[in-house]
Length: 222
Image (tube, rainbow, N blue to C red; front, side, top):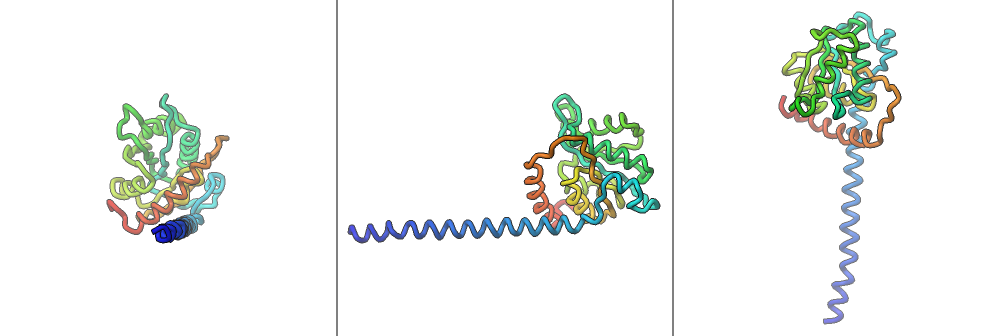
């Protein structure tokens, strides 16, 4: 009995190591797959992404005209003010729109419960302060993700051509999603007035690119 117990106990470390190896391999394959999806999303859209300077200086044809400038929302502080990242997206969108390249600005973000949290209301007021006429601003209060914003841009607002404005690390995925729904679009990277982009944003974007790659294959809700 003692010898049999020793044999069983000696097998346990071997089984554990094999299981650990399998988990490591699965994890490695998962990260590799996510990496490939990220590369696909980035490479599919990067040639259509411009800095504000390049966009306004003629890198894009001056004859091009778009249905809308789409500016994607992000954090609004508890006092109702735009976070620095959102403020820079809006300043950039205003500068793009003032070139006369589009019919209106679509602000898209989370305003499900505007009494508690109102991205699009904040965005509209900010753009008005930047000299944009209120009649040239349309709000989508249910743009709860990049994918949903582009889906709704097509289905609800019938947008076929657009300039997409968002923060640099987010630009390729935004353009990729818009292309996936048939929007002929270019992206413009928002200026950065000096805030630091946290590492968290890049990790989150890495995962989100993989998610949107899968979503664009099956297109839920479309």
